[in-house]
Length: 258
Image (cartoon, rainbow, N blue to C red; front, side, top):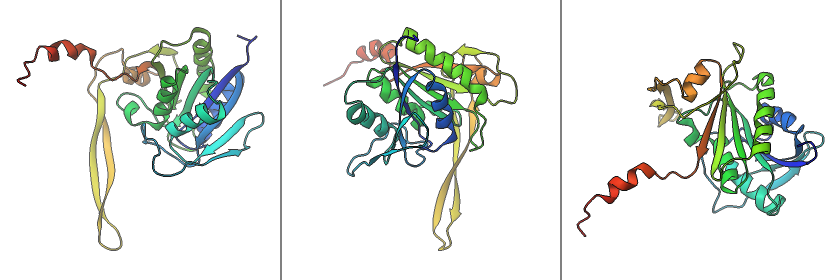
């Protein structure tokens, strides 16, 4: 691996100046040539949204020595699309990494996450891709404990590759206790019990603020929620093919009267 200079694309959804992306850049710089394309402002919860109907801006910036960096006016997925088409010009990078996200993207969160959607877009482009998230929403989050795991996971992906259409969703628990290691997991059966808090603005007009409580209905010890609760780094293989293959045979047995 040391004989090859890998090209690595770094993206995120917290914005190009976020501490999480800085930590990720510091790690992958040790593995190859780094190109960063990230939103110019936070884009959390954007999922796989893309920008249509208005122009996209892509401006070169310089924040960190030895790193080619761009800020993009669009979504995390826009960042990957522009990187592949305009910066790499179709000569795809060897690895796409997204994050480190401020906050977990375990379980159902993977659907809403801009961080993971950027990694999904990388996988759609047949680039080995990994999304990294950490259980700390603060701007002062300490990513030091994540770094050796990120380097090892990226090293393994570069050495072994990933199956076509598969990417990795990696989550780190809070650093209040030592990490026990890496656990390969499935996505937990858990979701948000949501509520919309009703408030009034100064003009007496109602508006709503999304709130909620994360509910884990999964008691299995092979899920990402279990791994994180037990101080492991969770690694879930994810695919963008959303076909429920197991349901095809039962649907074929239906008698459509047309």
